[in-house]
Length: 96
Image 1: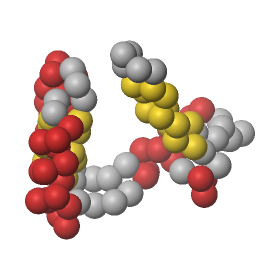
Image 2: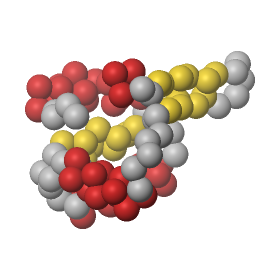
Image 3: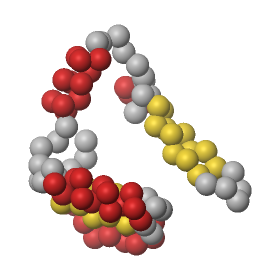
Image 4: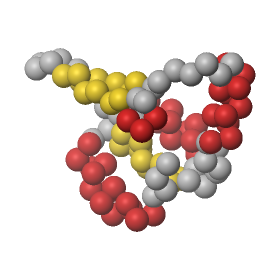
């Protein structure tokens, strides 16, 4: 993120939800140009995806959506279980 001019920030208040903010640097490319560039940079079907969210409905939605695109997805609502799964499958993941 930093090498592209962006940042990642964790916001946390005791007793409240946490938020992970990903900040992307804007560019002067047209919105159509950005969409075309984004589409070219998306991985093709067959990628391994590890998705974690504390809301089960969002995990199910991500699993359904990404599997329809041809990806192999492992969805979790429990971060500890996700980390254990990650430790087992980390060598099979594609980093992009």
